Length: 374
Image (cartoon, rainbow, N blue to C red; front, side, top):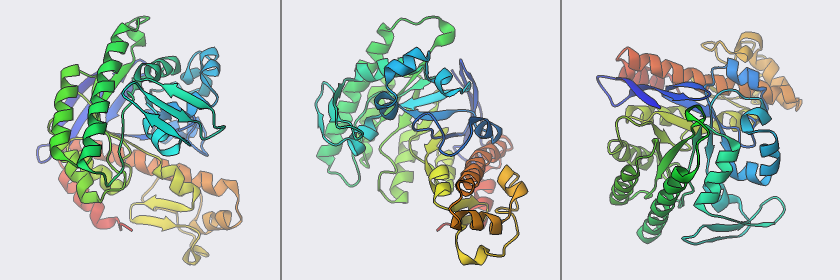
C-alpha cells in the first residue's frame, strides 16, 4: 500500500506513495473535504485539474443523507458522485459527538439522534465499517471517541481505552469480511487518541501497532488546543508510528500547521478550511490571507496572488472578485474556493519537491517568512 521513497536529510519530512485501487497518491498530500460527496461550490473536474489526488467524504452525513440504500443502488460512492480517484471516508464519530442532537456512548457503540430529522440511530464499530464497505472508499477509518480540549486525564483515558477497544473490534470485523478480490481491497487506518497526555498517546500507539493497521491517523488534535500543543502531540506520536506505514493528521489544514506537521513526519492532511474560507470571502495567498471584501481592493486590478497559476488568478482581478462578493454573486465564492483548493494542493506539491531536493527546512523558512499569519 505505502512506499517510503525518501526522507529529507535535515528533518523528519518524508516523501512517499500510497497505491489504491483507484490510483496512486503522492505524499505528503492534502485531501480536499467533500463532506456530502462534493467539495462545496466546485465541479469535480476543476478539483482534479487543481491537482487533487484524493478526496475525503463523511460517513455520518452520507449515512443520514442520501442514505445507504441509495448508495448501494448507485454501486458505491465513486459512481454516485462521478469521482474516479481515491476516496477516504472518516468514521463519522466526530460528527456524532459534535452534531447529533442527543447521544449515548457505551462500549458497545453509540446511540444518537440525527441533526437533520431527529431520528434515532445506533451504530457499533462493526456497523460503521459495513457502511464504509458499501460506500466503497479506498481508505476507511474506524469508529473512535474524540474528546474536546481541555479535558481531564480521566476523560482522555476513558476515551482512549474505548477507541482501542473499538479499533480491535474493527480489525476483527474487517478480517471477517470477504474480499471480492485483491483489486477491491479497502485499507483501514487506526486512530491514535489520548488528548494532550503524552503517556496516553504512547499507550494508544503501542496497542494499535499490535493490531497492524494499514496506516495510522493522529486524532484529537486541532480541537481547540493551542498550536504548540498540537505540534508537540504530532511530534511525539509520529516518531512512535511504524516507518513503513502512512501517517495521517486528522483535521490539520492551515498552511503553517501543515508545514510543522510535515517536518514531524506526517504524510496526509485534510481540512474544510480552503472552501469554508473561500465561501466567506477569504483567500490564502503566498503572502498570507486576503479578505477580498475589504475596501482596499475596490480598484486593485492585480491578481489575487501573483505567484499563483490557478484559473482564478490567471483570469480575474481582486477588484472583480471583491465586486462579486459584495454583489453576492455565486461566482465569487466559487472562484475563491477554487483558488484556495489550488493553493493548498500546490503547497503540497512544493513540499514534495523540497523533500525530494533535501531542502524542506529552507522551503519552510522561506514560505513562513513571506506568509503573514493572521
